[in-house]
Image 1 (cartoon, rainbow, N blue to C red):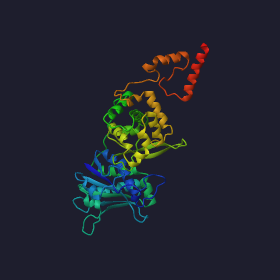
Image 2: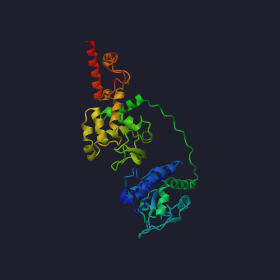
Image 3: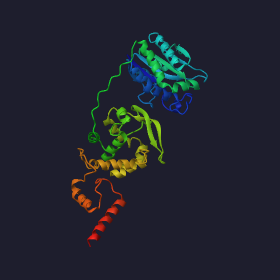
Length: 415
């Protein structure tokens, strides 16, 4: 069975359509709420029963025409356009607008859906309804243009009624499970038993670094390889973060309005300039693979005129420290220690080697000096000029002065 879900309307305030604000919850407007409900709740709920599920809006920002949406239904058994309703603000309940074409009508199912939602949300049952235009066709465009075998609209609640808006917006998952359960019962399906995912191949730190470096080989690079690799490590925790595993997003790039690809929604921590950390829920770009994430990361900085101007200092930077500091000052991340963390990763792991054209990662260690400096390092250690730790770490001016002073004292003692 193939089901096409149509999250009605588009994104933003113009698609609010009288949706009452529920506490401080985001997406209290119809167009956005329809998308969140379908993409995050109803689609996975149906898939658990074994349905093949498509969606007419690949991203929350999209708003295809009714004709385009309807045409996408070709080859599907059912097209369900998901909405919430509006009237005078005093009406409550769930209703379904079924196709007036007898060959498409599926009233026994739509009545079951109404009953399931009404029971789950404890709202009035308004049943299946029909409406024709002056030419005797379906009044609603999505039903006129719908090319699935069966086409109907679910108006889950009246969102201009505060009570309905609250029970719906706070219970999207329960609503979705009620709808999916009603459809599955109609077709006599049971939820699939969960399948244990195959064990993941261990991606060691060295292999993770090499994976990023390999993906950069055929690209016109705007961001230095060392900085790109350090960002991937920091933002994704070596590819282990939820966003990296679930959305293949290694760089924490959010899904701004210009993004037309898939979306991964999750909670994320932000930091104010004062150091205060707070949590928000945000949409992030979702990719089919790490390679696509890496490719998009490099394009990101020049993907709009605003970004090209905003990240001008980042793009002009010729060495990793300057570029890392520019990323922080230009607002790539809210972490007030972002540049320091990137620089520390680059120097601790020796990622600078990639900026010089190295193709194969050579493991480096902070505990051992480079071959060319080993003799000098051991001399300094023997003389007490350095304590012998962290030979590849960055050195502050005060540390340099302290070492020079120690050396001068050694010379004085010999006189």
